[in-house]
Length: 298
Image 1: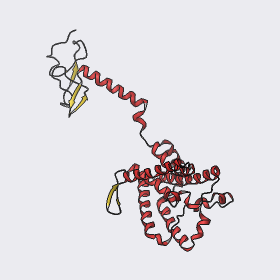
Image 2 (image 1 turned 90 degrees about the vertical axis):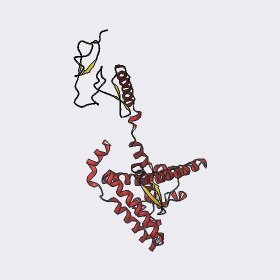
Image 3 (image 1 turned 60 degrees about the vertical axis):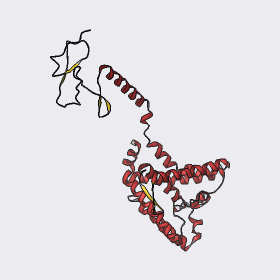
Image 4 (image 1 turned 45 degrees about the vertical axis):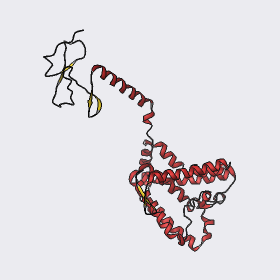
C-alpha cells in the first residue's frame, strides 16, 4: 500500500476521472464500427505480427468490443453492470487506483498475446485474444471479469438479481466464475494444450496480485504467534494471582482486584486499589479492606 501511495503522489495528476464513462463509450463505438463495417476487426484487432510491422494503433484499438446493433440489449445490460462495478471500485479505491488496476489488466492482455506469439509462434488475432475457446469475446470481457472479482472481494454480500428475479450474493457468482476458469485450465492441462492456460493466467494476473497483496498475513506472522503466546502466559499468570474475572460471559484480565472481596475496576469505576507493603507478595486491596485485612505472611 505504501508503494501505491508513492505512485499516486508521483503520477496522480495523470489520472482519468470517471474512467468507466470512457470505457462504456467503447461499446457504443464498437457497435457503430462493426454494424457499418464488420470486417473492420481485421484492422483493429491485436495482431502481434502487424504490430511488429508498425501498426501500433492495434495496441489500443483492440479494446473496442466486437458487437453489432442486433446485440444492443445484451450490450446495454453488460455495459450497465460494468459501469456500476467500476464506479463502486472507484468510490472504494479512488480514481488513481482504479486506473492502475484497469490499465494493468490491459497491459497483461497485451503481454499474454506477445508471450503466445513468441513462445508458441501463434498469432492471437484481435479482440478474441484466444478466449473464443472460453466463450469470452473481447478483452473487455476479461477486464470485466478482473473488475468483477475485485468487486466480489470488496463487497462479497452484495446481491445481484439473476435473471432479474433470483437474488444471489456476488461472492457466490465469483466462486462460480472462478470454478469456470479453473475447469478450463484443468482441461487445457489435461489435453496438454498449455497454450490455453497462458492467456487466462496472464490476463487475470492483476486480480491475483491485488488479492494476495491485500490479504491479512498478520495472523500467520511470527510476531502474531509471539503476541498470542505472550497473551496465554499473561492469562495463566493472571489465573495464578487471581486477576482473571468472568465479565459478561468472558474471562477478562483485570488490572486491579481486591484480595479479600474480589472486586475489580469492572464492578465500579470509582473504586480505588492499593498494594499492602506489609503483606508478603503482590496483594492488592480495595480501600474498604486495605486497613482491615489480615496481613499475609510466608
